[in-house]
Length: 124
Image (cartoon, rainbow, N blue to C red; front, side, top):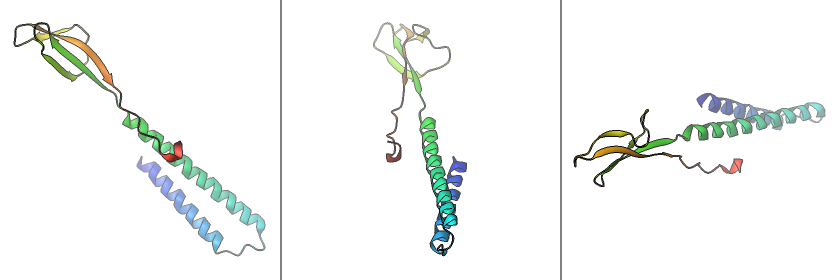
């Protein structure tokens, strides 16, 4: 992520330098060089834009972590416990004995998918 931010910053600085160079250089005689610089600036601006979009998409992928939970219930009373999923959990697995004397079993396993963050205005 830092590498992409540094690349975006350097490309932005290069664009700013080239724009400043174009503003303060007399171009009356060399129209081809002026067109060449405009094309370079346009390509650099597109590169910065694509780099920005790519970094946003990568950050969105990193944020989407699914959380899986296991619900444990007692067969006699209304005792219910939710905990994070552990490898080897399966529905109806007996996991222990309740305080009331009934057996604790896995009633349900579910996954919570985090909501997608709203897209920035640039990607809409």
